[in-house]
Amino acid sequence: MVEQGDPGDTPMPHDVRAAEPAPLTRLHHRHLLGLQTYSAEEIHLILDTAREFRRVLDRPIRRVPTLRGITVVNLFFEPSTRTRISFELAEKRLSADTVNFSASGSSVSKGETLKDTAQNIEAMKIDMVVVRHKSPGAPHFLTRCVDAVIVNAGDGAHEHPTQALLDMLTINDHFASFEGLNIAIIGDITHSRVARSNIHGLTKLGANVTLCGPPTLLPVGIEKLGVRVTHRLDEALEGCDVAMALRIQLERQGDSLFPSLREYHDRFGITLDHLAQYPDLLVMHPGPVNRGVELASDVVDHERAIILNQVTNGVATRMAVLYLLAGIADGDAG
Amino acid sequence: MEPNDIIKAQLMDAQDLDRTLDRMARQIAELIDPDQDAARSFALIGMQTRGVYLAKRLQAKIRDVDGFDVPVGVLDATMYRDDFRLRLKQPVVRATRIPFDITERQLVLIDDVLYTGRTARSALDAIMDLGRPSAIHFLVIVDRGLREIPIRADIVGRVVPTMHGEEVRVRLREIDDREGVWLVTRGTQDDASSTNETESLHG
Image 1: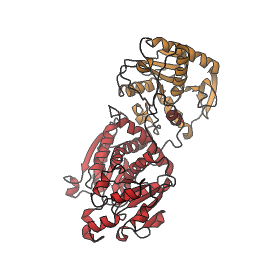
Image 2: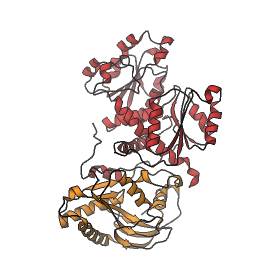
Image 3: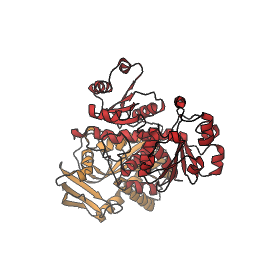
């Protein structure tokens, strides 16, 4: 376990490290579309920056003037509560101006295309766009229509990079290095953008990733991403350091991908017995949790379930991403 | 030095710097109320990066000469800078570690070079967001002039009038390969050394 706390009155060990030049000082990307194209060094830079922003959140005044004058629009074509609130809070903590746009009750329901919506928003002088869309690649498409910096907040079953980054920050709080760490991702891999972003990110940082779920929820050939696949929860949890349970989308029950929620829980749900059997196992979940499906209700409330740490880290991670990308927004002004 | 630096003059050698720090330690000690516990009523705040090492050295000197035990905090004011839209890249956010309450405390803010005054301005804003100190004093090794905002230092090592395009480099043995203060001009800039670009914009 790595303690991130204050070192006392003489902060010698911490600032010696902090005073050293960071291995990488900038992102090589203008947008955050996914972790597939990000390097391990870029991910470490985001995590290191996020740790400093997290300290801002612990202060009495939880706001810094860093992004004053930058306007960010949150463009959510899919319903989202926690991701949108987390981004909104991150933007406000950085003193950016924010505009929220959600699909319901907007021009989208009147038949406007994504491109027209984006160009209209850009005409209002926006610097950054945080976008969630049901179609994979929608953020990539936006980069070709508008000049603003695009941050992917989830595109279909493709990627959800900020969720994976906050997951990695949370793991990093408990383990100093990702090298050789065993992470199991359990549940509906096929429809999960969280799983895909985590697979890309975690494997780049040197972790061993095991995917576990019923065959109907595991895409054929996913081993090519450098992961181990199993259909048995015991096999996934054996020697595992962190288990990430994914949300079962209840609305997919009609697709007959598994017989019933009860049977899913019996075979793939993490219970107190598992926590007893694997005394060092930590449990994560991107939320919202279906209690009694992915995780037994008692597991959600267990001290080794670090789900709320993930939520706190989400705001700090998004602050770091916005900060690092915003600097490149006006590159031509130099 | 930085890769493209052309040295014009050495302003201080290691011995000069040490003597200056001795004098500064005494000046700081004069500010400390002997009737109060210095560990609770006083603190040094070193600004990333070299201000941190200067603060550590001053802390040791104050302890040796006057016996006051003064804590050191580390401040990074990157989040408070005002040149956001002027930069080609984001500066790295470094650690801020102030593990004590600064409210009702006298602070000495420590930096290596005072130039435009913008870094000091951002540091003052950063400090104000952490609490309400009873007083803030500002210490620099070199005041090179060319202020753009009304900021002054209370404790100054040396005043060196300079021109734009010149740089003052304070180098410390803790992190550099040499110790002393140099006046340099920067040669042609390439992207690799643009860190200094942002530093000099800010100074």
